[in-house]
Image 1 (cartoon, rainbow, N blue to C red):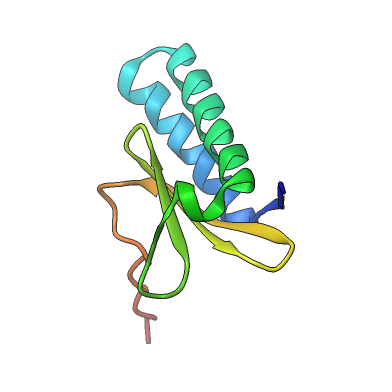
Image 2 (image 1 turned 120 degrees about the vertical axis):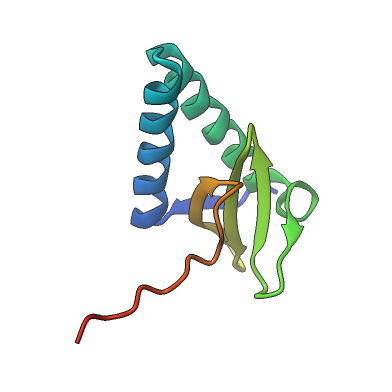
Length: 101
């Protein structure tokens, strides 16, 4: 059974940034368009097979990979929450920024 998918505002921002960086890096807008499509295709697959697509993380969430990007998600009773989408070379969870005094 397909679970509905909720993408957090942070994850939406992450996707936009990944696409923007791909376009800057390659110089081709089509690269960003394809990346966007691949990310959302993978997210759709997660909705159908959340346990089969991603691997478990120590914090109880799961992660799936697509073209060098990590999709972090949580499986709830009746939906999937996409928490973050970041380049796989980056740390997750993101290090907390120290507050300035």
